[in-house]
Image (cartoon, rainbow, N blue to C red; front, side, top):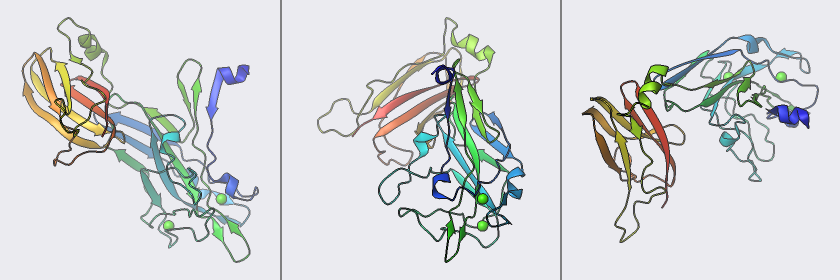
Length: 298
Ligand SMILES: [Ca+2]
Ligand SMILES: [Ca+2]
């Protein structure tokens, strides 16, 4: 019990239950991450690529899957269902596989689910994610996978290495060699001081929240975002969906130092109505930035 209190460890051995116990997943790549204003770059080594599979006496490394999550368990991206509707494979943000003629679906399914081996696109050792929201903490994993083995008499399903992040009792995270925790565009200490100055940079909660856009007879469709600027400058106000994809640029230009209200009608940059869900609004004014969540309902 004490051990549980001290450290909650979250493990994922995604496909290991599919396979014979003698088989082994490929080695983990060693991953590093750097971040800046609106981007995160991952880089990893080639350790995984000389993984040997004793069961078939072959080097069976095939490729890499990149996972991104807003929570350390990576549960929120586990959205691909099998034939019974169970959530099984996690959806990667990128796949890179060896150019070797082995590609697309693994031929044998498990509960109606085939494993995707990639498109023979070739291996990469860096990945830049430009869909991140500054100030948000992201959890990334670079997961190696092998190509499995399908013969008339037996099958080895493709295996992935684990992606593990532990949460310590003090709230900090412990990463494995192939996982990282990173917050892009974190404000500097200088800008945090300015955040609390009397003339204050402020992004207020939007109102109403949750909000709707298309109920007949409504007098308050959409939502209002209020903010104040301590000094004049170029200001960007941007709305992202929960996947971190930019859906609307509300403002991008010079503003003077005062308070503002800006309305959002729940539409994207080309006027399309967006689905119900959680959206993030982000303001950037020079080195100052802030992000808040809001919920659109229909
Ligand atoms: Ca293997
Ligand atoms: Ca391939």
